[in-house]
Amino acid sequence: MEKLAVISDIHSNLEALTSVLNDISGQSIQKIVSLGDNIGYGPDPEDVLLKLKSCLVTSIRGNHEFAILNDSYKRLFNLNAITALDINRKKLSDSSIQYISSLDSSLALYGALFVHGISSNLIDGYIFNLSDAQLIKRAKKLHERIVFGGHTHLLRIYEVDNKGLKKKGFTQKISILDDKQYIINVGSVGQAKNGVHEATYVIWDIQKSTVEPRFVTYNYHHTAMKIKQAGLPQIYADIL
Image 1 (cartoon, rainbow, N blue to C red):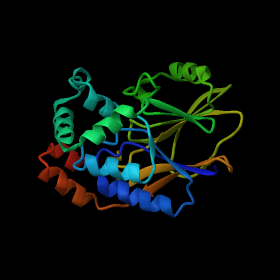
Image 2 (image 1 turned 90 degrees about the vertical axis):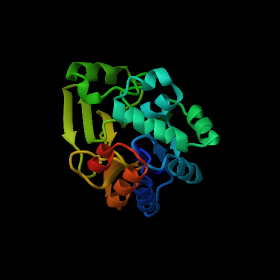
Image 3 (image 1 turned 60 degrees about the vertical axis):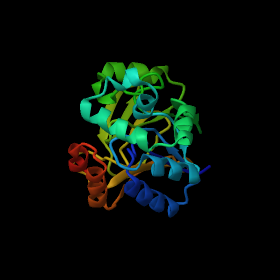
Image 4 (image 1 turned 90 degrees about the horizontal axis):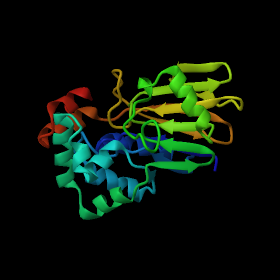
């Protein structure tokens, strides 16, 4: 294994996913891992899941997958998110629900840990809500030196060593150093934030010990139109 693509938070955005997979196909990638929230917010949950399966993408469960399976948890979401999930649920086949049910909440692979939120038991936890001390404490408990996370929809790197914690923006390729731990937020395929219209994902070059963010253009205007046509909340069209 030399190169691995890490994607996250597709949120039923087929146009973004298709563009990202096309970009990945030109990067000599051997494996793709999705960090969950493949569904929710967007108009094409069934087609997104079918494409992930057809492309042999390994996925874990995000909080939106968990909410599809658990009504009591779904009720903790805001009203717009609940409306979007209910519309998404009606579009999903029985086999897709079965697929979602089969997903684990974390994955350990090639010496790295893949989670949706903060950890396997906090899939809806936002890393930026933790203090520096809490983050360092969590990092020290991990067996893995590299953690890939999603959920925030932001590209960020948290670097931990014996001197403490550094939080970095993530706009270009960086080297993974042997004497540090890394928590890497991989952004979002389907609903990138901070005014970014592109789909974002990360390439981990295991052999060269680098991680690189990728920014992929797609027709977000078309996705926004489909969101409106599906009766989804207007806010999810506006965000794109």
